[in-house]
Length: 143
Image (cartoon, rainbow, N blue to C red):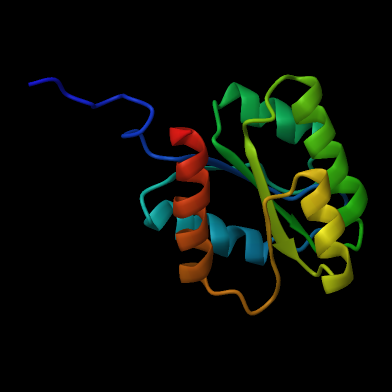
């Protein structure tokens, strides 16, 4: 019987959780990172004040399945767009981008159109985020 250990579908999802820009509030990002880790995913937390270039480089180097961005500064349109554009330029646009933070409902459609797969706002539960990542990032890997 062949083992599927090490196959892409059986390996834990690898998620880069990042705080782009100058925002210094990372409690939410750390809570999400821990919830994903506790759910069996491999999580790489990049720390505060990361540039989009650093985040994309980390995701590629770590062979990440997804990038979760936490943005509370109001710069979400610029920061998400830059990460998505850099992934496309690197030929790594199979890495799913999702995020959360203080993001107005009016901006969610524009973020989706630019390639952000999901946005979680305050009040989202860790269970909701974990379930979404498993269902959508895992599905992207299997495709």
